[in-house]
Image (cartoon, rainbow, N blue to C red; front, side, top):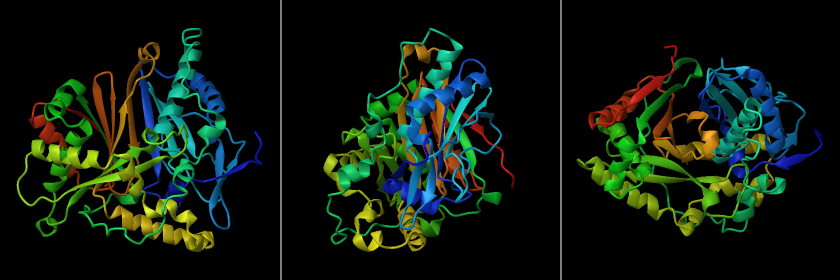
Length: 418
């Protein structure tokens, strides 16, 4: 593969590069658990096949004078048994390396990828291509008629959709409303830049009817449950601060984009607990607020200023070594507006024949705050929670509340060193 081609990074990727650190590696993991033990040799072949469909991942991030950029690389992925932490550090300045890795453990295939390359949608499509190519090798002839592809061209898959759809927007900062600081959990963080990961499972048919009964989305119902779990841990002196859940929104649902790169924005839903409120009432309020922010005009108006900073002439002209701290500052300022992140990656719907070989999907994202992903597949709802804190009270509150209301909950957790 030629190493002479280079590409610009999208604006969100620039933020990830400015804020990556050993704890929050800005990596995300998506996993697929099959019904039989993984054959590592076949998985290696499948990954080498999959990158022919997704050459966008075969890049190395390089440092320019004004911005980082992507350059094609000849480095090939090597599949290994999982031994490293979930969401490992996949970008080190000046180190020749791929910014993703594929590992396996038992029946599970893991894709860890640096968020600067893609968002959850792009990562899941790449994972599903790997899984299908693996099943084609394991069961010759059985899946030969199947493909996981949007039909997009290589150019469309590599498109910087932020530039495509937001370059001509009004970039004036005048008139922007000041954004309120929300409650941000404190407390001791885990030693050695660790994160703790929790995988929470529950039956869809035990939780979805509760949301439908209230005419709210499952995201809103569980978002309200997270708010209450957090509120029960807030110290009295901070109870006047609102709790804000940040929800990544797939912008491909609003703009005609097939990009395999990042194309999302965060929508914030806040509530200030001035008195007692039931989960039913809070879920309705959450749902109303969330839906009000999902119309195209609202989505466009909510694009954060750092996502379009490239188009400001004063910023364009600043060298990268000065620009990076500025991007870091604005990102940290933005982080203070959210208490936790809750990302619904949706219902997994592989082709029926392929699904017969799949047990489940799951995923995590590194973070300096509480972060929960959500997947549903084959009747199982899976939440992947990452936390930098020693105190696990919020997660216990969340699980106990749902379990106490009659939902069957199973929780798995990683071990950490205290």
